[in-house]
Amino acid sequence: MNAKAQPEARRIGYARPVTSVGRQTQPYGSIAPFAIGLSDTICAMSVRNLNQLLADTMTMRDLYKKHHWQVSGPSFHSLHLLFDDHHREQEALVDRLAERVQMLGGVSIAMSHDVAEATRIPRAPRGREEVSAQLSRLLRAHEIVLTEARTFARQAADTGDDGTNDLLVSDVIRTNEKQVWFVAEHLVDPTAMRADPAPDGDRNPLA
Image (cartoon, rainbow, N blue to C red; front, side):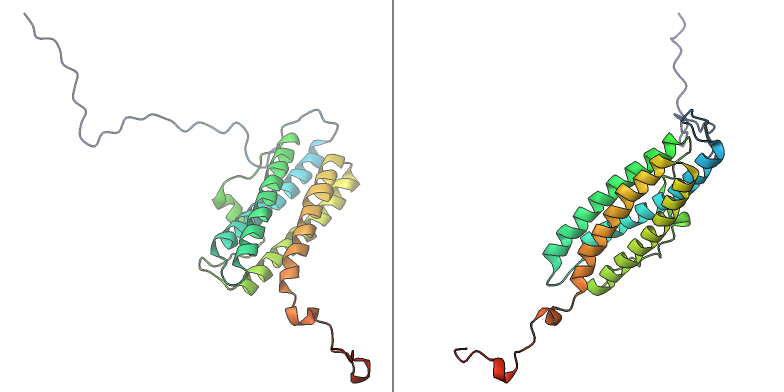
């Protein structure tokens, strides 16, 4: 009687392919023609602007998380919490911007290496910085985002892309302006907050 055939042993170093790389269903930079009452040209312009803002917002989000982890000094607790709050708000903006790109028929930027190539925000060092440098770096990043958001909002309004204009004005600009306020207040010199000593003639004799 013939022995039952045994399965061939897998060669050492043999890797069984479990996935294959498929073709892209939509190339980055192209527009899928959705029936939303805007021309492909208008959608393409808004998508390009939104992806730039998305790359910078993703960088801003990560910058806040970096500083959340690395902040130190007497203001550690308050800034640790503030940076995390701002990180969450930036994360929400990332989702809204990416979703708007998709609504317009575009492809949103997504991967960190693509974001690093596209962002206009200067790269931060890997190491820890002192608090004043962290705050200044954040304020510069906010200024970049706000400047381009205002420009992109005006362009969206001029072309009739009201949805993009509303997102930029109501969400991106207002959120970043509020965060600038909160961050900038930590740079105020505490001694400047004290009242000047009263002239000798105005001193309280009971003091």
